[in-house]
Length: 454
Image 1 (cartoon, rainbow, N blue to C red):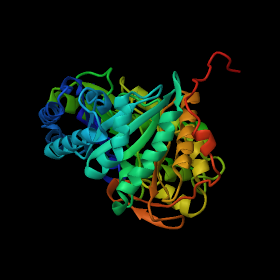
Image 2: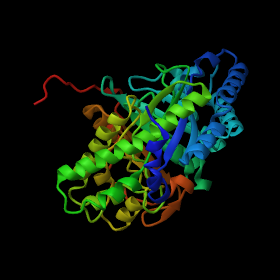
Image 3: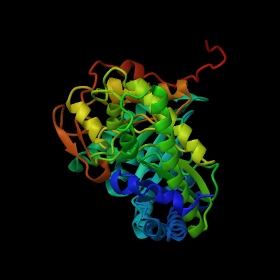
């Protein structure tokens, strides 16, 4: 049983160490909104979202006030729209009308983002899936709060390389469509492998078809808290280091559990999962890279970085699962470049490259996240990056993702400002050798075999 005394123990974490609940995400099933008439579908979607989510922001603010716990974002995730619009959308433009409806509903209820403008195409693309994917550039250019995701692979099905090739083109088109905002649309578009149904974090959140009609998922955070406790563990053994991280993750997760239960009770909506991910922000002292440096690295990216990140990720999970019976989503440590001041500093110092970040994604929570790349990067190069990350996820049975931003008109050595939690980023160089012949092959990379491990 969680009580307020457990929260009081974390007052210092909240006031001095940047502890917050990063998001309350309300998942909403929209399958019952599907209709053969596009205008009817749009009307049903708007009415359901504004009805089910009408009190989400108010309740979030009440919990902040009552318990003194900052809740940074209140968000909505929805059923992948390629499923909802399959009966009524005949063109990409039809899907854009749904995007506008979603954006209008999100503004009406006051949330920060709405995720689920998505398609799940890990084995193949239906006509509806392809139409939605081709609508993404226009949809993200025409809206403010929509987040989009496409799952192109899984451990069980392999990698849909036709979708990977298409997403390279779509990312580049989205960059062009939003170039007046430094290609910001790409910051709200992520390509995944092994996407979970219950992720509360954007841009990859969607409401899976196996979920309840509505559900509350909570994402906690606290890199600053972990860094602070590790400052007291200099010269200690790995055993002490691991125990320190684990105990801290337990306390952080208990705060998230309290918020989740309160939100569930006040909204009358079932509680789903706690996502344990350490999600950094551009704020000084709220950085995963700083944790790695506290462990003993001069900079994130130095030799030993992948091992240190693997240890951190594992201990966060071990502490979190003791604090909550319902852990899900992504649960680990995020390494987004633009959203983590320590990562930015490491890039600027020359310690961190895309290749090293790719190695780190083998053991972290997601993948190549919020990385700005030159605007003249070829679509096939972006597809190659996606294929590499999808392969890591497929073989290692974990979620991986790519959220890169080819900033039109900018190149290596320049920076781009996204604002808010999205932060700013230096433009990172990309391997310029060609992979187009590989990417342009048709079909699917088969799922890996698992019976001959040695």
